[in-house]
Image 1 (cartoon, rainbow, N blue to C red):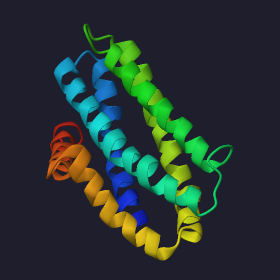
Image 2: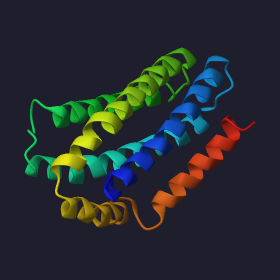
Image 3: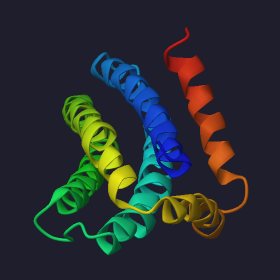
Length: 180
């Protein structure tokens, strides 16, 4: 497996951890114990890390490389992944709408469960189907170049050191919600 795909799988691991935290936040919301501030902070993590950082790398760098290597842009696995990325964005918006201006625990919990289920299935597809496909069809030197492009993406889109700050935020949320 290429280093570029390893980077994306590592990000999947972080997102899967975030989904465990989301499950706990959802439980606490149903019990009336989740604060809007905590939820919005967590949703900020999802928007910035899962979407801007991770999906941005896939949509802006990996998928185009796969298309250049011969995979179809439409009607194949790439278009399925793009549709699923849009669905994940809509579910994050639904969670935010259920949180502000007034927290609706039931609506939030329903949206959170739908998002977590959706993302777990999506990650499974990417890890078991799309990423091995990328390793097969994209030239090794192109995959190697993606690693540098991923770093540039983080720097340009998120800012210097932001990726690490988001991992630190995830660790804080893990301590608060899973390690207590």
